[in-house]
Length: 295
Image (cartoon, helix red, strand yellow):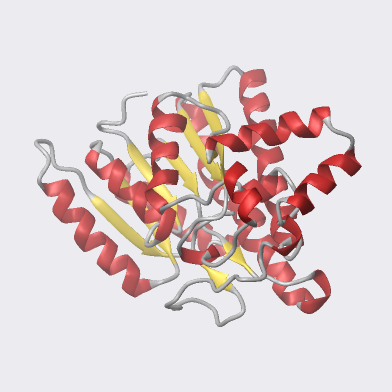
């Protein structure tokens, strides 16, 4: 798909994967709307992106809006504003994320409900706000940020993993629905491993595990997978590192006990022990780390 002249909306667009993706889309000639809960980060992102957009032969426009995607009413209001600002949304990137690390019994239910609200329910609300128009126009691209934790359960991330598995399943099902309806609306889910910086700083496998599945070096690696693989080439399920493509294969070939043993051999059961998260925190207080990387 050619991106020049298209419009995009990115949730969690002021930092991390969202902002790295916005940079690439701006360079490709997209106008866009960024949503985030961090007003200061949004202002900084808009200033930088507007400068880059203005340097293009055909200038594009950058809009931002403070939006709590966990609130369906706020999503409805912001969606109306986005359509008014851009006229239409061609590309929707559901990137906003939230993590409350720790074993299941170490957090209260409020933390787990918020994990589901931002990582799953927000994807439902935001997609539901824009999908009918995409169907009416018979065109749209939806990219959902899932996770490596949407392919295999991660100790210390049980509810986060559950939400990301659900995002993967939702993406697969919506793709089948669009095909059944004869609509040119296409879906991709992105599955990143631990990122070396940002929300998952400090989380890692052991030496053997990192040899098989190295950490992702930076946010632009995932942004490239979104823009080049998912949007331009139509890839349905990009994974980073690419070796994550082995996980579904191993799950199909190995008995469950053997797959679990392999995970322990790679240190998956202790992968969150060294977790530090973001060094600067402008969103909800620790131990939760909000903004927009995925494991």
